Image 1 (cartoon, helix red, strand yellow):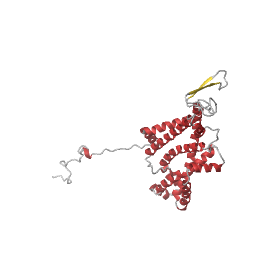
Image 2 (tube, one colour):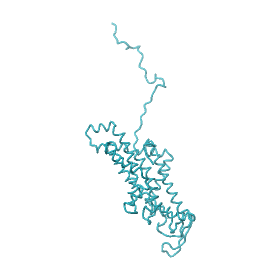
Image 3 (cartoon, rainbow, N blue to C red):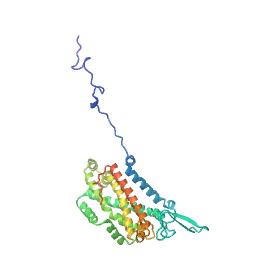
Image 4 (spheres, rainbow, N blue to C red):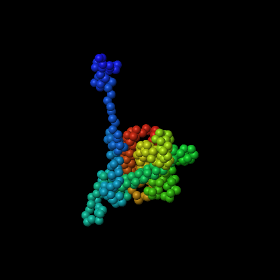
Length: 332
């Protein structure tokens, strides 16, 4: 009796080609990309970029110095020693009401009032850090809100809000800051923060609006509308988290601009009070002695340059880590 078998199936049928029978050039290895958190991406990206790592180290030193200024500074910023002594100089005297004479070292010299420049620069870092962070916080909050509403609702809301942004864009930040300080009532850290913060609203507003215009048409936003999510929840839970990468980069790049703006206002005598040690005031105090005591202005100027350079390097590194193009982060 002949056994009936299906066509193509039998003991002599060649086996199905396995992985070993496939030529090597046609074999594909399955690759699994490990999901990385934002923190892991930041750490690996900064460690892998020498320029960003250098900027991060300088920024950490700047923050550490500003926070622990009373413990890092060698002297009180208001203590008076020998007048206009050069770098690596010494002064002798009874400075702490002790019985004996004390010999004090001034690595960066003293200013026209006899204050130790290094000590005043360390304390001035606190003012610069406070003004920079508070200014970016104000600009971030107000600018993001304006851009989010303008991009999400569109229509007349977009027209009104963005016309204000365009109007503010026409004014240089320093000129606008001077006007706001004049209106707000004079000198002080609070007025400086408000003035510079408002002056930088337009940078965040334009950036966020552009991101929202592209994100509001995404499928997950349409799905959120379909399930009945409110506009407020869609903006804060769906759109804004997906636009955070360019905002982080923009905030990092805005910090050095805020430091420069504070220094510029203090240099013009429109920033903090004259008794507050800041880098801008040190620059201003030394300009009339630049021919005989160059270190009074040069030392804080170098500190400003190094800090701004470090933040810019770190910001460029973050832009590469988050794959944010230069066009997405608007700068003047």
